[in-house]
Image 1 (cartoon, rainbow, N blue to C red):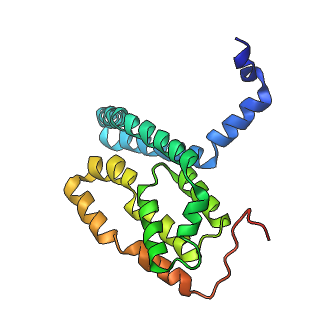
Image 2: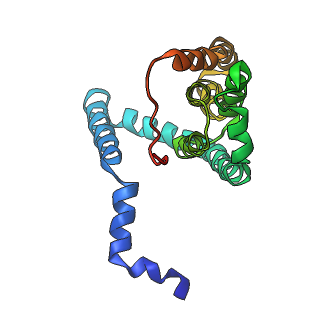
Length: 192
């Protein structure tokens, strides 16, 4: 199997380990072990095993949704007409640009790696800062993947719908505020 020769490369292994298991991973792992030990001391081993069993069930329940969300994010990223998108949300787009950015943010699946990559691509293509803020605010508050993967399974459909309805105006308001602030926006990676 010559195609798996890279697995023998120790530099590659170290790079993968450092990027996949960075400081935040070890911090969360340490906290999990610490709270597990605390639970063991206070509630006993049965409580720890019950919690781990429930966590495993939740992981099995969520894994198909996470895989589908990441697949959709990758496909959208490849198919996105970035030049047309930036024209819709450019500096002359007005309120319509904020609404388009809000809708785009709400339907962008995946995690920060897909949302911020798309945001950066649209930003360097000439998008308005208000639209950029509306997009990322919509992704964070109205994201359909968040509703399907987190809100409904954890809190139920009624809570998910209430939270969604309450948050609908937030991205547009945030975009309007961003347009009014007297700040200069510098996008990392943009041409000076």
